[in-house]
Image (cartoon, rainbow, N blue to C red; front, side, top):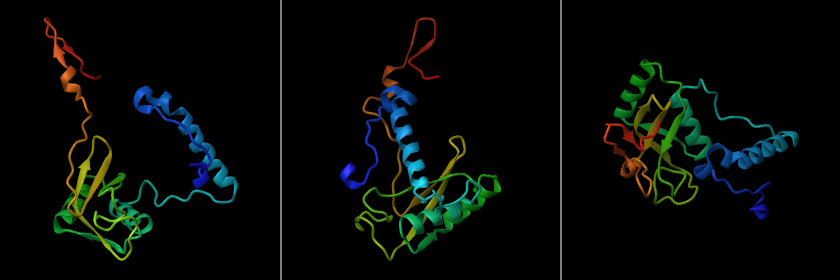
Length: 166
């Protein structure tokens, strides 16, 4: 990693130890950012938290993925208007896309250019506090662990639930 330009390398064990397992990584990230700023290269975000969802998706598509722009389906346009009308048009946006390409298309490997990102739909996750832009023909499904928590849930003889989080 150092040969590739990384300023620090550390093991993170957030999954096993929660926040404490990520402390070393968090400190390394803060130090890297401070060094970056001290070298005259301040962090400039793509957008502010108040930026509209569509503008956030466009910034991600054009500035990170190097796309020519976004193309919204009629369904995506309707969903976006509904999300805005409910007062959620400023939430963070998560782009659901293939992991094989910076584009929406798994066959365009790596970092292609000369493409437009099709947004098939917008999904509001109000409880979690973000909007998902589903790109192209991406199928979404919940990510499950190798051993689902439901396997460890039970009820004792007094009707108390066991193995339920929270």
